[in-house]
Length: 230
Image 1 (cartoon, one colour):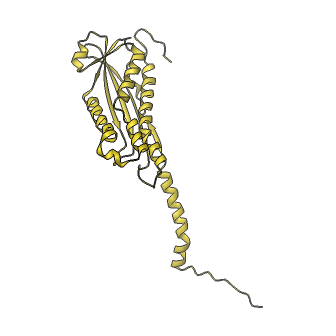
Image 2 (cartoon, helix red, strand yellow; image 1 turned 180 degrees about the vertical axis):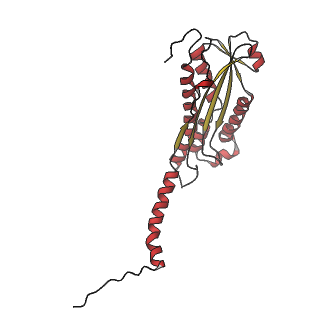
Image 3 (cartoon, helix red, strand yellow; image 1 turned 120 degrees about the vertical axis):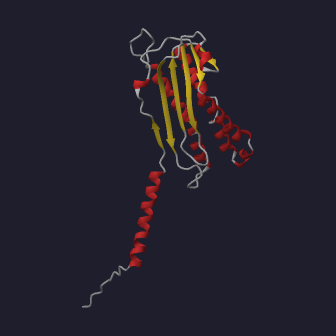
């Protein structure tokens, strides 16, 4: 009886053909893993925070970098609201850019947090004017907001409140920082819905940073009150 044997010819060409689907699948898994959205929050060093704070009212002043940041956010906002390039996007994408780049979002949020904690908040142009105001506490706001652009898809928000006595003695600083790593906005043939969702992460990040700042501020007791605030 003759037996029929199937002979496998494992030459380099056949091996390449066999391995190609497996390599492709592995590559797709790697890309999918790298494309996953990741969120980050800073590790807070409580040693820099004030041990206690006066009850207010307070004098609020913005740092030079915070003032410049507001200008940059205004330029970004206006670019998508009324700039010539705004018409290159669909209405939904353009609206997402405009609604998530409000220059006053973080500033208004910080002011509201301070009012909830200290009552009245008075704004001053310079640190010297704030120090001479006669108010028991001077607060200096610094912030850095990074929005999505053609070079980066990593929105971020970093807020800092420095607390000082009227004679400019530093009491401590409360900080918050949140950021998110997204896949490139225009990569992988994203649908409009996905692009809009990514853009809206800009606002989410800013609000998360505000929430974190408020939580940390609320844990600092008022002068004479040693019980932990909740």
